[in-house]
Image 1: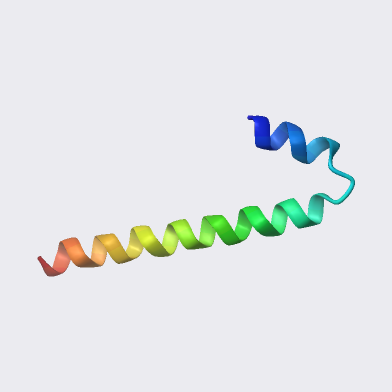
Image 2 (image 1 turned 30 degrees about the vertical axis):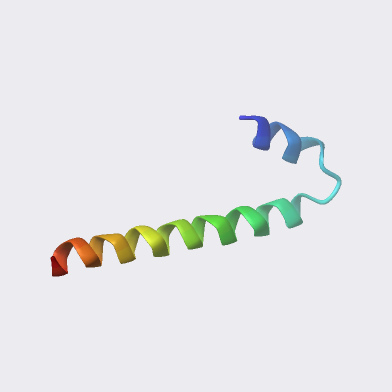
Length: 41
């Protein structure tokens, strides 16, 4: 909520969007890796 509110007032929303996308990608990759380990074990 606070992050979205900050992005609305940010003069450069593209930077926040890029950072959010990168964080989401890392989170997805970590989740996929964890799922892979669970399947192996």
